[in-house]
Each structure stands twice: as structure tokens, then as C-alpha cells.
Amino acid sequence: MYVVKSSLPDADLKTVAAALQGALVDLLDLSLVAKQVHWNVVGPRFRSVHLQLDEVVDIARLHSDTVAERASTLGVPPDGRAATVTAGSGIGHTPDGWIKDTDAVRTLVDALGAVIARMRERVAATADADPVSQDLLIGITADLEKHHWMFQAENG
Ligand SMILES: [Fe+2]
Image (spheres, rainbow, N blue to C red):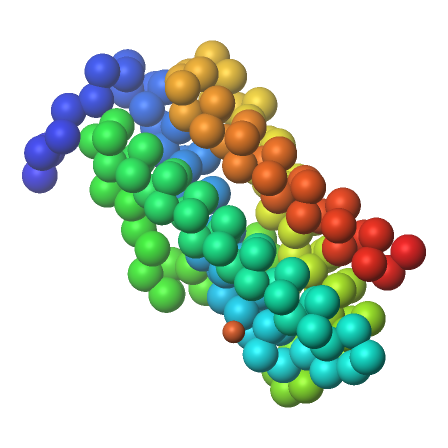
């Protein structure tokens, strides 16, 4: 079914669709990981880390909507189903159960680092294919990098 027609050539659309879908999956998983750790963090820095994690949840949810709707705008149906997120996320294993505040911060440093590396590849891949989508990905990456800095500073 071809409901929404894109103005992009097919080859460019394929590149951009992969970048947006990949970003969607990573951002959805990031929102889940940050919530999981938000609920399970324990330790002397509970309060600050607990609150900081919800900031990541908020931006991950916001940006997942941005990339999904950009895909829709280009005529590519986004796929945010749980099974798709599980199969495609670039974030590694997140432990279950209580998590010490220092480990919680490290988990977020690693998760954000993994997503940022993939986002930078998407930024490079979309430069010629669709600078409008690239602009969105650049803004999202900047936001993720800011939070990556703050979590690294937490364990400094
Ligand atoms: Fe909460």
C-alpha cells in the first residue's frame, strides 16, 4: 500500500528510511532502559540519578516521536513494535533487579554511548540523501551527547 508519497528518489529514501527506523528503535529502547534504571537505582545518590534518568526518558520519547513522524512524512511507515525494538536496538544488556547508583550511571554512559555512535553514522549517511532528516538527527544527537556528558561527569 502506497499512501503517502515521498518527494525523494528511491535510493535516497531507502537510506533515510533505514536511518530513521534505526534511530526510532534505539530511542525507544533508550527510553525503556532509562525507566528500568530509574525504578531500580539504589544508593546514596538515588535522588539525583533517579531524577536525571527521567530527563533521558523524556528526551528519548520526544525524539522517538520526531523520527517516527519524519518517516511517516516521507511515506515510510515507522515500526516501533516491541519485537522490532528487541531485534534492532544497539543498546547492550541491561541487568535486572536493584542497581547501585554508580552502576546505574555506568549503564547510562554505555547506553548513550552506543546510541550516539549509531546516530553519528546516521548523520553521515543522510547528509546527501536528505539534509532535512539529517538536521533532525543532528539535533537529537546533540541532545544525547549532552546527557552522555552529564552521566560521565556523575562518575568522574
Ligand atoms: Fe518515576
